[in-house]
Image (cartoon, rainbow, N blue to C red; front, side, top):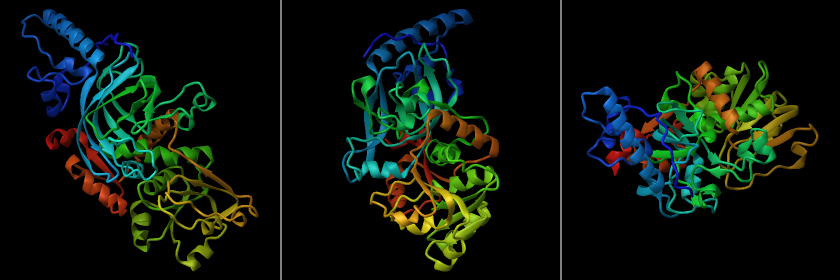
Length: 422
């Protein structure tokens, strides 16, 4: 790892940040991040002298922290119980192409739950989860050209890829075999370090894996779009499920499903929600704007809808019968699975062969799709329905998420609560 670092003078004054961040960067406290140099004030009547003194101090502090890395605070799981608690760790040294981000909000995804409980057998404890990250840039490396201090940005499911494969070349870094997960991933470019996610106060990410958050999106409600949003938007674009007048089925009305309904309606589609829960009918039709609602356990309702849909997004993360869903599609209809059940799903060949029906999966989306999704969301006013929580409520939230007791996404107010819970 190189210890050479050049601090770019794209930094914000303390007055630009909330009180908690200003306090952290005050002269009484040792700066924790490369951008903390902005908190050093020079008592001088000369504006020019103050500028040069601050620049000199910034260079010294920035060089020291870049070489040593910086302290970070997060909440981590230590074992398969999945229980999170405060965790002090170090972020790597900032490089010329890195962006340092103060985390404001981070959504909670089912993937976080599966990972911290090691349900996929991949957990590398301690695990700091979180990959629906929204924050503000506090400093950038000397080679960064896409962002500057003060920009509102997001970080999604991954923070790296090989950059040389066919997938990377075509804008599908999410399918690169060398994809580096934002949390619980292995980062070969930085000594094979295990990545720690957004349930923390600061992120350090290569600029190519950061997206810009357009003006007008409420920050807490935009955070889940970094995973849930692009997970449904990307396959809708890829498989032509974005054409006005087409009929889209959405299986499940949870964190992914409710966003899929919003995107479908914004595309001008006819949208039918398919759910096992009759109690969600009013929510789907009146609040989210779906056109129809099917109870998948009602044979008469399902029979009446046979052969009516151009495509279906299945967003459910638990085991469920899928053969009846294929019957709802027209010939050559497209089924896309975006949920991640831990138990295998059963699909007989007769469900797809006679009608020439397609089946595909989708894992989030590339950086290009994620940026396009955010811009589309801002234009059409699409956000997630969220319950904002403090960090000290996170374990309760995870228990509720396991029971699907959330409408529809938990979002942690990281900046507003992390320091007070440690």
